Length: 252
Ligand SMILES: C[S@@+](CC[C@H](N)C(=O)[O-])C[C@H]1O[C@@H](n2cnc3c(N)ncnc32)[C@H](O)[C@@H]1O
Image (cartoon, rainbow, N blue to C red):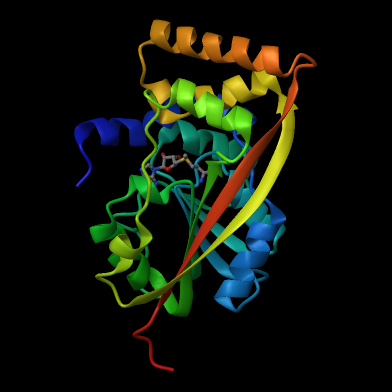
């Protein structure tokens, strides 16, 4: 069960929703190729439920791949941004631990950067209930690529303040009748140093931090990055980790 602090962080994004939409990274097309390959089906025409859809970053990319997407989002601020970005996409206010959908409604359920906010004891059975036979659950997350020196140095500077919530895949899914496959995709985007700072400021730990402390930490980081990248731009490298979960107790 999530602690009160975790619950507060889970919905903290509402306070920075516009900045989140502008500064957070997207996901590479290789990721969606991998979803299709591991799922053994195309996204074109698939009924997809995008859970924890936030401002619609993954939702929009799924639509571009030809999926028929329904977005699910608990936060009012994030939902308002999603309505602006993807006005055609049906949006349902709700959360992954109690999916407000009938059993067998979707071919694919996705959680982009959002699964770690759910309680797997509830969200796994709910996903399995709402998936159609042969449906799949696809979870992914952009991790900072610590193999790159400046990212590792930044992590050392900021780690005491931004503990991420790692997912132990074998432990999380072991109790359930599922088969799990993972894939890691390296990618990067070129952005201004200032955009890196704006991106970091939307991480939940920074959002809930005392504003003076936040400004001080991000300021220190800006100074370090500006020294490293005097032309004001950097390649922001990610390792996007995909976990594809397939129910095993379906009738063939
Ligand atoms: C880091 S954002 C990811 C947003 C979007 N999927 C993306 O790729 O940018 C996490 C989102 O999960 C939502 N969230 C928090 N708790 C949740 C829950 N229990 N079920 C579903 N979504 C949740 C938050 O409101 C937030 O919009």
